[in-house]
Image (tube, rainbow, N blue to C red; front, side, top):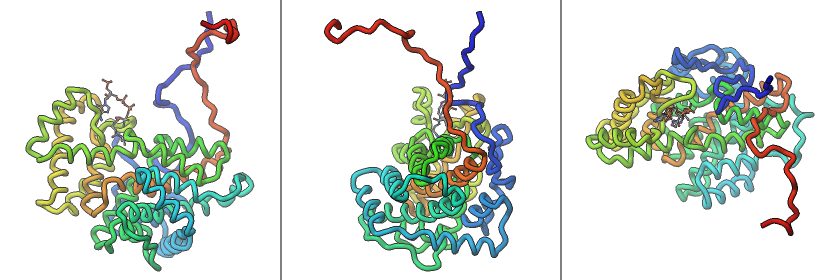
Length: 385
Ligand SMILES: CC(C)(COP(=O)(O)OP(=O)(O)OC[C@H]1O[C@@H](n2cnc3c(N)ncnc32)[C@H](O)[C@@H]1OP(=O)(O)O)[C@@H](O)C(=O)NCCC(=O)NCCS
């Protein structure tokens, strides 16, 4: 007997979903590159988020003039209406900042729903989404902290605006550099990660870019994806002092608890982003601080979990250490994933543009049906038990 049942890969493991020239994740080599440039290079101290916006859109490292142009472009596009600001602040009263961000991002959409004739504006709409998402995260952080709205200041770069609005403090040079590096590291991660795949699926229905954005934010929110940065810091906080961490984490692993910030579908070595983040951690975490204790706990988690799971190809991912670095620059825990979303908006929007450029056929995969064989004999309601 022949069978036409297609093979099924749970979680689409190993199934290509797009052709992309944006970023490459090499799981065995433990390498991540944007347009061919390794993340270790593009997070050098002088690199800014704007520079990587230009790199991902243009495909080449930008000149100083191009970087200045991107800075100006983001600044000119980041305005929000009073209603959008009020909506974001209101949403923050009723729900987690990440869900408030999802709602607020949807409110950035136009009053029409007809993007296809305007697809030539995909990059412009993407740039507006990047610019306004940074601003929105600031709005939400201020509302969450019970502070009044204080918007972007003239001439502020994207990271400067975000960190000032989120923390209420003008950032030091070091904090600004760390923020830029974190935003760059989180900006893209191939088309196959769950939220970017979501952005491509929603794009394929010819949706407006802001609908793509809000859907991708929902996908990122989960603790198996972007929400792991928040979950890992909360785990470390729950462990108390670093001295007691080892037996606690051993017990968790014995109970098959999934450690947030550990394991990856593609990397079977230590995530290269986590190594860059540890370099930042060494610079920015103040010795003797509570964050320094939390970082010690994260190192214990790495040691114990690697000893137990390393031979199965499970190692720290980007989220094991990123929370400690965010905390060290004064970011509240509930804002970690919204900042991840603001960073990844670049990847989502660049993938949206690429999806349109590559034909944009609607995603419509198959299923393997496991229900009763039709047609079943219908039973009228009056005859049912
Ligand atoms: C990232 C992640 C979702 C990848 O999932 P996946 O490729 O589908 O892998 P699975 O969940 O099937 O895990 C495979 C095995 O490794 C184990 N494993 C995976 N991640 C683990 C973790 N963080 N802690 C402990 N065990 C883990 C699973 O329990 C499973 O074991 P089993 O075969 O005995 O059942 C998963 O590793 C995870 O949930 N990690 C924690 C959340 C996280 O950090 N997410 C951010 C990713 S950047």
